[in-house]
Structures are given as structure tokens and as C-alpha cells.
Image (cartoon, rainbow, N blue to C red; front, top):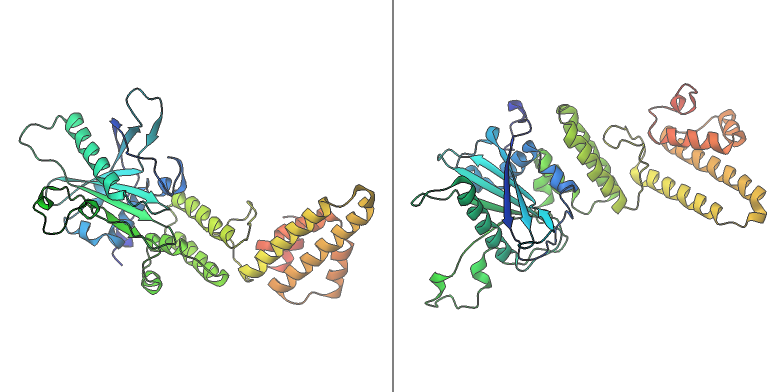
Length: 363
């Protein structure tokens, strides 16, 4: 593992404002639909960028990057001159290097395959260089800072698009014109292409992110949730990242068909039962309530009784799954309870550390 947790995580870095008239060639097919989206927020945090580069971009490390001096570059992209439509670039960072120059790191997020990604890369890089020339008044004879564009792809299909623009140009390899063609490249990080056992051996948060983007069985998700939670216990100062990863874990639950109540903190709760069992119970609860709402008004009394009995049975099943056999007196207490009381007990039972906590009136 490259990331040295003993050195501490670097704090939020200062931002460098760069208003620009940069015009993308086409609409992004991005993992993130707007500047407030989850991945955009994740990689707006310096330590997340550091872990991504250290774990998965060893070529960039060869120039000696100084992550303690990361600076965020906020470039404004406009769709055209005079247009009121404006959009944010995905993420751009500036990193000093051992060679004495700055590296500009562009991170693009993709959920779909863009065959023309290399063309877009050339456009973005050229426009960023032009903006640097204009904003910093780069003198004639000077050299431009190096750029590295990372494409972070989380789609399930293997990425097939060429990573360099020369492979998109209709020329044979021995053509006399070939040496005159541009050869811009981007660095592809296909999150689902990394071998699973290799990702498991890595312990950084970036590797855990890659694993969350892979198809997961319920037991695998339960174990991975525990690893993510353990990382944040070792790094209690990373509250912003904790909230974002809680959203990621919740999304992974959703993809398994498990809708987790908003009141449940998935990175803090201690589960004693299998996620598949809990997910089945939540789904049964939703189905029972939805079915009850659709019953005819003329059967309200019978419907209410059925809802109470159904809720009581669901609660008994969940408690037995989590804590073992129930005493007959407790089963009787559950069957005699009102629906509102059963709802309250059920919500507690999902994450309660012990049986007593479910029925404790002080909670």
C-alpha cells in the first residue's frame, strides 16, 4: 500500500480561481450529472485525490509530487460565446513536483464508454493550457506546465475506446503523415477491471471505493461495509468523507434491492444478522404496508387488524434472527401491542445492540 497513514491526511487545500471560456466539444456522459454530485464532492477532498494517485497512478509518482501543497483549480466551462449556459469542469488540481514545475491533474468521471474521449481530452487540455497562458501571462519562450488527464470509469462493460487520439485517425502505421498527427493521451482507471483479490489486499479508501463499484453479493457488501467503517474508525477526523461514503454504501444497498431507512447510519451500526435477511424484512414491511393501503375502504377494521398482526409477525422474525429464541411472555406482549408501538420497536430492532434496547421505554 502506498498511502502512509502515519503521516496524517492533508487538510482541505486552497483553491485557485480560474474563470475561463472553455468550451467542451460535447455533453459529458459523466458518472456525475452536476458539480454537486457525489463523485465530484469526493474528489474535491485533497486526501481522496492523494490516495487515488498513490494507489493507482504510479507513473505520476515518478516526478515526485508534493501532495501537501495541492491546490484546487476551479475552471468555468461555457458552452459557447454569449451563452448563458455554464457548467463546471469535473475536477482539476495543481500539484508541485520535484522537477520544479507544477503538474495539472484533470479528473473526468465516466459511467458510459465515450469512443471520442481522446478528442475531448485534447480539447480540455488545450483549453486549460490556453487559460494558463492568459491568466498567468506566460512569456514567449517559456514552457507550459505538464498535464495529466485521468478518466475514472465505473461502468460494467470493459472500456474499449482508444486512450490516445492517434489511434482514432484514419492513417496506416507507416504513413508519412502519421508523425504530423496529435498524440494526446489520457490515463484510464477502469474501476471494475482491477482484479478483485488485488483490491482486497489494498487498504486505502480509494481501493475500498473501487470495490464498492463492483457487483456485490449481500454477504460481500456486509463485509465491505465493515471494512469501510473500520477505516473511518482509524481516521476519525475525516467527517466529510465519512458522510460521502455512507451515501455510497446506501447506493450499494439500493442496487441489491434493499432500501435502508434514512435514520440508519450504515457506517456506525453493528449488524448481528445477515444483510439479506434484514433486506428481506424491510421489503416485506414495504410490501405489507403498500398492500394494506390498497385495500378497500369497507374493510378498514379487518385491514387494521391484519396490519397489526403482520407487523407483529415481522418484528418476531427480525428479533429471532438477530437475538435468538423469544420468551413466550415477550411474544404475547408483541401480539398485544398497538401498531404505532410495533413500528417503534421494529425501527429500534434493526440496529439495537441487544434485545433489551428494543423495548427500553427510555430510548
